[in-house]
Image (cartoon, rainbow, N blue to C red):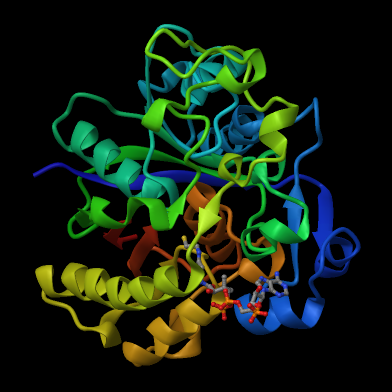
Length: 351
Ligand code: COA
């Protein structure tokens, strides 16, 4: 049976480095607190009015496309995973398509937050395995820095997140044993609000911009521009996270979904060449490593340099590992994610 493989991979992070000390200048936090709780030393922020989620994604995509040995004209389909799109709508997939001159092909945006890349990979895998497409471009990209609360009120969330993008081209392979072996996707909406950016949204009568125009609180109200001055002062308009709850759930679900992928294919943690976990928090990754008794060389982490880049974190880490020669043909690689939704997922790949 036809299988799919990652035929090309690339990543792009903005040039601007923001250290923990930089954040401590604008909010009550410290390098010591951030490093001790999360492992993060610095992160990248996109250049305002120049870079957006889709332009970061396009930069990563160009590299992945070239490394796959194709041109943008050969791409059959785009999947774009992000929680920080350029616009409320349309999605960033069509903007990346325009940027790379790939008009006409399908572009699918997915909203699975930190699990977005692994969910997207499973979709690309199905299209390629079925023979429908030969070159699926999958992008995970985020510009968090434009939507964070830089007052002390938002410090528990803001210090964690960074901007960046990663991309892969998923292609068919007929090589014996090679390819994506299985994908495992999960979600539990019971905990949706524990890690959420709930406004602007249409729940509970609050819709885009109604506050600015002062429309009466009735069914006739409608929206305008969002993130008006009144909203900036309202904590509902920033990401919210119940950190300890998220942490506890993550350290249970990561090992579970990794073991699910290994067991499905008759492997044990010892067989893994490399685990690339979503870079949520270094403490979470270390907990998972310990639980599965993995050696240091079996796990790749780079959250220290980039923070948590949500849908971009796995492809950035995978690409860095690949560039460093830590992912070679024949290796058994597991990608695993957990995040807002809650959603969690894994993918096992014979490279
Ligand atoms: N700098 C300094 N102090 C901070 C801070 C910051 N950036 N953020 C929070 N604090 C303070 C809190 O206000 C609190 O102070 P108090 O004790 O006076 O009330 C104290 O530190 C402890 O806060 P708490 O939220 O209990 O800390 P924690 O040990 O749970 O660590 C996280 C916070 C966010 C680092 C941790 O919960 C975590 O990593 N959770 C998982 C997050 C994650 O992975 N999210 C992404 C999933 S995809």
